[in-house]
Image 1: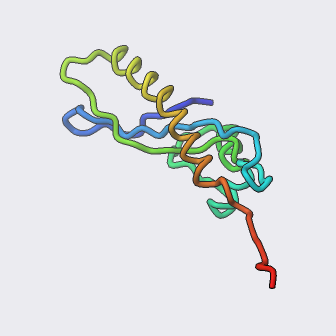
Image 2 (image 1 turned 60 degrees about the horizontal axis):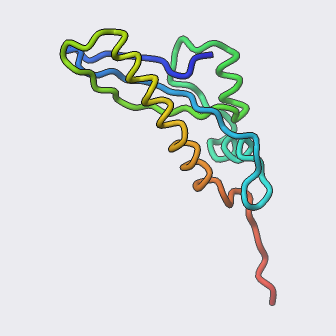
Image 3 (image 1 turned 135 degrees about the horizontal axis):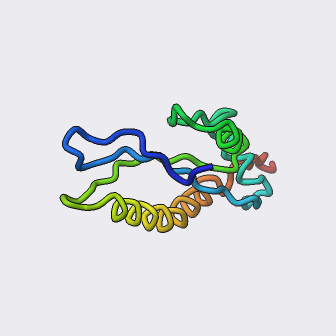
Length: 119
């Protein structure tokens, strides 16, 4: 499984469309619902990847809520080597992992909550 995939590069070579996969922690939210279950439910039962060449094991992990897919444009620098681009993408993935996981934790923190008002 890959942490990210490059789908397209702009005609001038200055930007790339990148699809990244981030692990979803196997823990519960504030109301006792597993984040992976909450993610799958929020997405309607599956998370179809934008990556047309995705491996089945990776698609299965997305469908199980073990991974979360995020797509973004990555802008390159003139004269940047392939290795430099790769290093910057690796750093961006690592930095984004914490941000994405925190955003999901907030977004799904009360997923599954229901309450009847006493009275």
